[in-house]
Length: 335
Image (cartoon, rainbow, N blue to C red; front, top):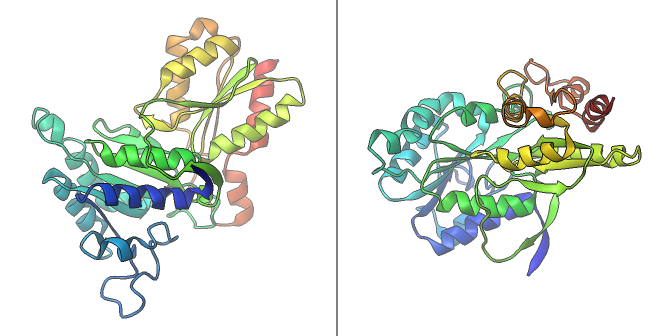
């Protein structure tokens, strides 16, 4: 039975179901239970925005572990635990903090299977908040998905809604490879119908939340909502847009994108990340390689500018790609 719940609750539910099903699943991170060594209420926080709240009461401190403020230590511990038979889900809080523990991720977890001839498995999930619009300034607001996508051996997930978040997180926990699970902080409160039972969504299968024939918009995460808003505006102008939600960035479903562009002949790739080496650039390159003859216009990218995320609200609102920018890029394709 499906209920209308938030993305934050869907992620919590996915963790709860998998911890109940599999005793090797553990959760660890900063303040996920209320603060290690604190004298206050044990379940005071559940992470900086309360995503893991309630889990310690069900599974205890041996499986829901508050860690010191040392990302290199506990991400390294999670990677090691995964190599030794557990299935850790480590919360990196803001994914921006990956700079402190990137060696443990890209030089260790991502390479174990390759370096040990396929015999080593590292079923670790690293969850973290991404994206701007939360007034959290330049060190807590970045969309760093392209950095992780560049690394072979990592799987990268970025859901746009509560239904996908639950299914993709359960799939991530059950997967035997390291997964970077990106949660856009401005989507936590968004609602969707989500089944109460466990289910999985396969990696590498894009969704098409809106079908159309005039142009293709390809994106992921928060930008899916901006793209759908743009599509509604364009529909009033008799421009019928197809919107593709990539859902996972590694593996990435280029086949669905190419099939759509072969139908529409036009491509707008949208990415909240900075423009250089972005997911938008990758999508445009792949389409140009595989569907060049189908293109009726040069593909366009809509991204954030190549600057840090501003803290000033007015500038941050200008920084994040808007529905108006996306709609304008499609209009230029139609000329």
